[in-house]
Amino acid sequence: MSTSCGPLTEELQCSICLDVFTDPVSTPCGHNFCKTCLNKCWDNSQTCNCPYCKETFKQRPDLKINTTLRELTGHYKNKNPEEKPEVLCDFCEERKLQALKSCLVCQSSYCETHLQPHLRVAGLKKHKLMEPVSNLEDYICQKHERPLELFCRDDQTCVCLMCTVTDHKNHNTVPLEEVIEKKKTQLMKTQKDMQQKIQNRLKKIQDIKQSAKVRKRFYTEVLEMMEEQQKAAEKQEQELIKDLEQEITELKMRNTELEQLSHTEDHLHLLQIYSSLCSPTNTINLPEISMKTHESLRRALIQLRETLDEKLTQTELKWMQQYAVDVTLDPDTAYPKLILSDDGKQVRYGDIRQNLSDNPERFDRYTNVLGVEGFSSGRFYFEVQVKGKFQWELGVARGSVTRKGKITLNPSNGYWTVWLKNGNEYAALSDPPVSLFLRVKPQRVGVFVDYEEGLVSFYDVESSSHIYSYTGQSFTDKLYPYFSPDSNVGGKNSAPLIITPVNYSK
Image 1 (cartoon, rainbow, N blue to C red):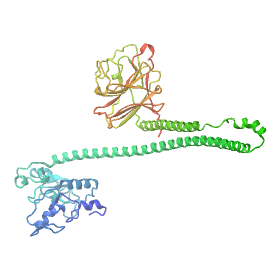
Image 2 (cartoon, rainbow, N blue to C red):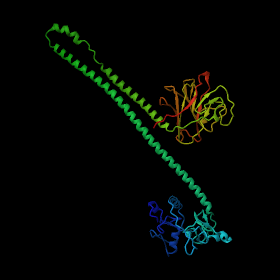
Image 3 (cartoon, rainbow, N blue to C red):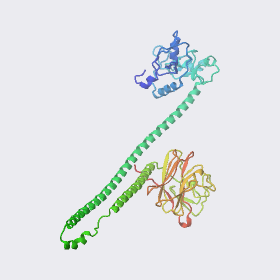
Image 4 (cartoon, one colour):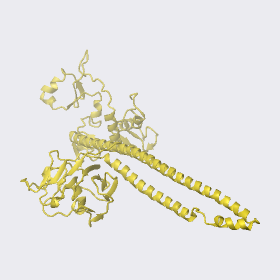
């Protein structure tokens, strides 16, 4: 065994030859050995027992290849290739030269000179040559001493031609090369899947780290905001306490004067100051203070809730902006009256119908256009300026949506959108549509999609407010960014829709 072998190799090591398993088989007691090693051990013994735990078996067990263990050892050998030992020619007499090929039929290795008969003589040319190896016996059937050039699918083991008419008669056998090619293809597919899993997990780690940064920033901002509110409340409370204490001092002084006056014998003086001492004072209204305190607390809680909602949306939006993609409008899908900018970032309605080819991708009845690139996994985000628009529609659409004739925008037909109509009527075009009542008129709209989660969300970017979300959707087709500047209603809707770069900062 190589000294570089670690604990994993020990688990994959035959206790007879002390090397990594070759065609591993399992005994009834659960221990594993190379098939050849175990057969040799039993061939040279009167009894069949486990070389490891010494358990004796009444009958010689029918050994089957442990395919799972063989795949593990094969994977290990591929990842940890051993240095190939130098193979010398078996026929050089004095100074042995390095072998060029090994012959499975002759069970010998040949240098370039001694290999010549195998390249010229008709009978020898039929022999199976391979890259030189020192362990030729591993490539030979131990029972029939013939090359192992077939694979038995029933027993999942390599066999020779004689095996197909004896032990493996009527078994499903195929050339070894055919099996190797299929195994290599499967290995490449498995490796590709592994690499994809690694990438997915690396991406998930980045997501978690980014979420942690955003959460920490959010908590810091909220705590700072709450601390400011706490300081303002404490200042107001201290001022109120100071006013009350001042009033208490004044009331105590008047009370002392009243106490003294109640014992006076000077009736004339009593009558002269009675009115001033007993007249109502401008004292603080305690119920009003209580009301103001409760009202202040209520306003503070409402403000806190609104601020938290705003901060949450800002945080959510910042997190989504990391998935920003570069969207370009696809002219092959654009309705003929739409005018696209040269860079594919703006679209507006034109009064003249352009002479464009009516290809299958083009919308022929409604003022629609899609993005060039579609997405079939992961998350993506883009922003669109809608400033100055009287009407518009935005969202995403399935790549397979109907482009010709009448179209109804809803998820059942492959559209997840929101729109503005008549300057102030907002709606999510679900089934049925949902009217939206927005605090402010959006100037820039952000669209976020999480393909696996079935989520499409819309945001007012400048006010950091949520507009609408489609949740629990099931996506099976590519999704494309969808835009409609709508027609120029009475000259009120001439402004273009503009795909804007996303201002994302970590």
